Picture (cartoon, helix red, strand yellow):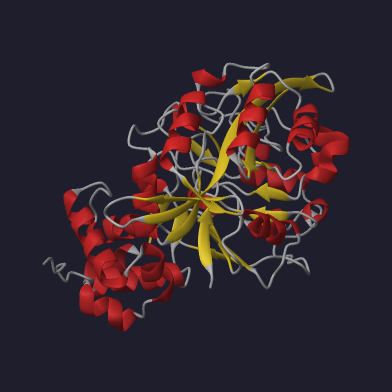
Length: 416
């Protein structure tokens, strides 16, 4: 039986993260989304690791279960993300890396090593003065079953290929330890088709996770597996790019990511890579250097044309979170009470958010919600949307209906 997995999130122990991101809220949100397996996030934080040990029950094979009195049943893998800052080849590097391990003893031993290079208690995503290559080698020595994934590999500021502090080749970052890297996380501002333009990435599985900082953003990107709920089997499926058991990833429309295009937020400048190059990567309004976005960087490093599909590529689907669809249709904020009421109604009727977004027919949706919302969900499912690209930390804008379509669809939502 297939299931969804979101393996990279953060908790209330990380900076700029909702105080609601505790185990209980994470489990409840995952259940609403239809996600069976979650990364715990932040196991490097000593206080949170103790909390996890008290809250989670071993379910065998590197999986931990959270079950509360309301019946929410969510499984977890121990996960964390670290921020490696180091010098290599004469340049300062800043790379975020996700680490997964099968048990608490492994997490404790890894924390003992990482604690020499940064204050783990200061942030759920600790900053480490540690070369990524050295870190990978030592972690594999401590825990041969650890799984290490470069996070959101294209974002400008903290990533493997980031325009500001990244590398041009994965081997430059990890050296001899590249052999211990089997997967790369695409991040919100890129998707698999963008990564397929680099032949050097063909051997790596491209995985997608939410990097959530609040319960509502859990599951905005996920992986769909068809295997046992078992740490070692999930890791094996990813390592082998097993197309029979790694069914697909669910992606943001990458244009919606906040670093997809180039730009300068202070001036409100949003420009394509081609325009940026024409202006020598300077803001056409103020003349200062712009933030080089993900699409620009992909084009810069690619050796294939757009539209290339490698032979062993894993499938992907693009979706927009259900709250955002409802909010767009109603032209109100996604955190409004009206949106929340309609969202909960759909979850109650159909069981989960991913069920609504992927499986429920238009006719069945229309029986429960307004025709306009049912059409909005269908448009997203069929990828019939327009997106104004994000830039320099500003998320892109989604248009599920063209303005003239939206004006015609005046049917009022049925709330009950």
